[in-house]
Image 1 (cartoon, one colour):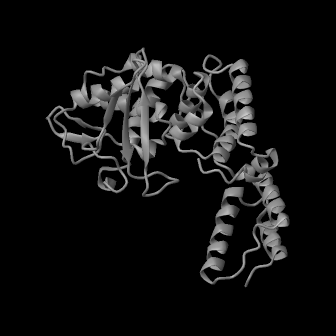
Image 2: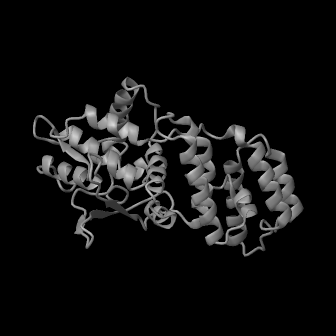
Length: 312
């Protein structure tokens, strides 16, 4: 110690093409942490090492997890037609779907994986302070704090929802859920619903996805995963002319991370149905992100170098 830059390059080269870029990045982070603990200089920022990492990202792409198709407006409309949101379970499902989509959040940041895993340290409570605002222009919004995210950890994040004048209004969906499930235990998950026996039951992530995918499969729409809501929500907001800075803030992205996200979107969007996104949509988004890159003075080379280090 310290590990020289040739040694770090050799280490990367040993696993290049055999492991994903993210795996190698994780290993290097561990090595760097060990250097920090021992007050040793770190040569991982050397240009040679960065070039080796770029090469490892490209050759390790075959080890990446399959890309996720996004949830689209078409998915949400199909879900809306199939649900009866006057019933407790469907009201909770509808509210969770729209909060995840228009709040650009990972589903795991809002939903609970198992009842036994529910923990106020990580999961938003029914008793959380939800602020409903009426703005000067006549529009309205809702916001609440979630205690944990994948990137901010215990700092959490704010979920901000803007009302819409259609059936896909996330603010109306949240209000409906709170009204229909008004008897739920306030010490449990925000998306808890009331059962037929008048008992509170946490809406679990897997049962939510099971119902959604059953409905979407019947409608001949793409099977989705939890992260698909965040992807689709970001795309929809951008296509609705919401400034990218606002969308980035909504989803908790830094400027660089948001541009890296677009690199993934370029691959992901064609996986969706032709009705959801056409070439003009994708071209429009490309222009938006290029202007965003220029305004934030982020070199194209930096985006290429950082690709593969993105935390989705």
